[in-house]
Image (cartoon, rainbow, N blue to C red):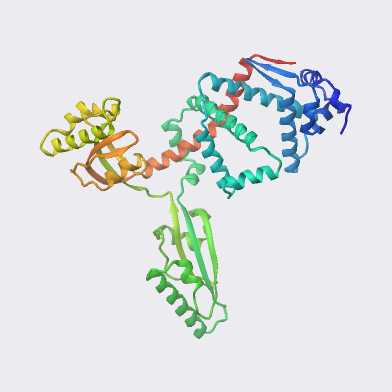
Length: 440
């Protein structure tokens, strides 16, 4: 450890940042080479004032250590030390500005939201939360610090999304123009996940060998048609010849071998093609899954009346009122009139309880389950959701072609994401220019 470096005042950092000169090796050593535990031996000092916040030398040192470790772990070339310090401090300044913005508008990340985020991270690493925590501790990291860093990151994401997304407008004309390009056509092509099996046949095979191979493929295909899975039928084949092949993964039609691109569009999910002959042998093609392409969606037209429990209306009385309204409707009273009088769903009450056409995933699970088992022109029994007690009437059902809507939504999301980074960079420059920043 360089003991002299520990005594260099942190005002040297500010001098380097303001002057743009390289930090001397001695000052850089105090920031980049000193282990974190040595921070307790140094008098902490403010390196920057940012509006109503301050950035301490210890924060900068800790962030620099993390950045340096990340660069080294990825095998990248280390930038000049003054550049590294300047860019790291500027990143801390931007984060401080955004965190203060979030605090002013009341952005909060609850412990439950944080727990859910940790669970997602652990799952992405194929670990349980306990295993994830153990791994952090094995690597010398603090779980508590990691949670707080994650909380800050989630706040930053919300502040950025709230301020940047509203600056992005995607017009119908932009979507149409993009769809007319090669990039747009490639983006919206259907994708197929194909599992392929090849029974190879030698070019010099005799007619007897070819007949045996064809019989073996026919037997396997018959098992599949009888309900056996493609993988099981192929792996358990007892014929004289081995199958090769496997999962080709998700591919667009243009990325498939021509042999498969001809048959793929005609196969339904789970369907296996008839045997296909090529110079290599006999192929079986199974359509494991497909996405994109034609999107036919089941939709339900529904209306409802919502009764909310309150301080003067207990949960049981709310359920009883919903049941009573169901009986009145079945006795001939008008559903729409009762919805206008009794329903507490502000969005639909004045429309007679109409929710319009809905599809899977738009309603809460309890409501969707009741909707699915209610016949057209029938009134459901009272059903409880997080909002209260509902009675609902299914007035129609249909299969709707949503292909164009799905394509436009996909293109709109793509264009939004492409614009987002540009707008984010511009917004970050703006808030940095508008903030009061004093580097010490």
